[in-house]
Length: 318
Image (cartoon, rainbow, N blue to C red; front, side, top):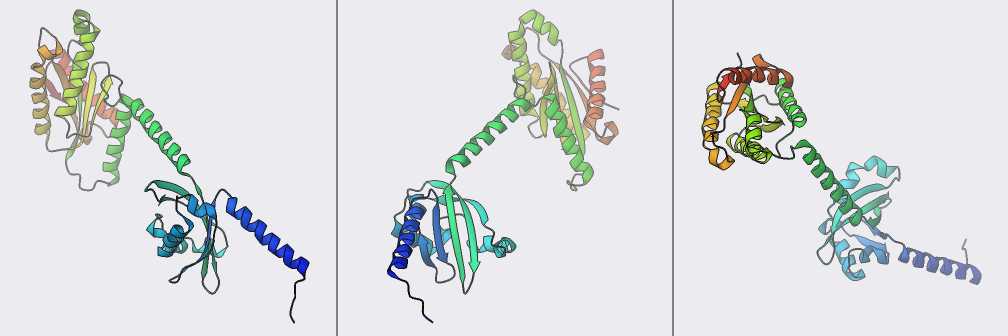
């Protein structure tokens, strides 16, 4: 039995195809229909498909024939294998990937891919340009990270504030306890620093010199203890240094004493008549505490002994 179309039906079919091609040629997304496999064949490509990346129709056809992954950062076969159940259900697979335009620019395209498995795989790939949105999200992420970083840091010294310092130390201690760092065999150390006679410095020289003292002490701590994990300003003239693993107690104590000597020589640079000094209290290992607050209190108790008796010295919590 043969079905013959009358003149009217033929005209309607041709009109529908013409309208469909016109519509698909002007939609704001690219559409490519291809037979996949070794002998890839392009069944359909609308104008937006090649215009999005600045190619001519012929250039883009050649690109696709060479393989999608030659100019777009995805492997269609891998995507199909990773989403086989979704593909069998006829649901589109969505992928955001960078693609290289003809002029070398990287454009971010959001792909929707449908694969039909008949005698051979046929892929229906549509995509829109998401470059501006991706760049905007990247800018927002950078701004968020910048604001977050600013909030974590002291505005004067750019050292960690007390809150972030506490969180960072707690995380390091948790890593040790959970066995994440199974190679950790050394002790950890918390060093508390307090600038001696800081109120008198402010009263005698003014806040400008006081701020200069704080800045120079912060810079010296960052440089002198750069091998340690964290350096923070805990508030006012109080600083802290934490190391999750140290060579030995004696090595830490010697390093703290060398810091006092270095600081003693900064009188002229700080604009002071008398050499500056700090008092240092050190808390070692789990015997001084298993969390930040316990370490802080232990080191602070050792520091208080120095402040009370001699100043410009180092004491270890026992």
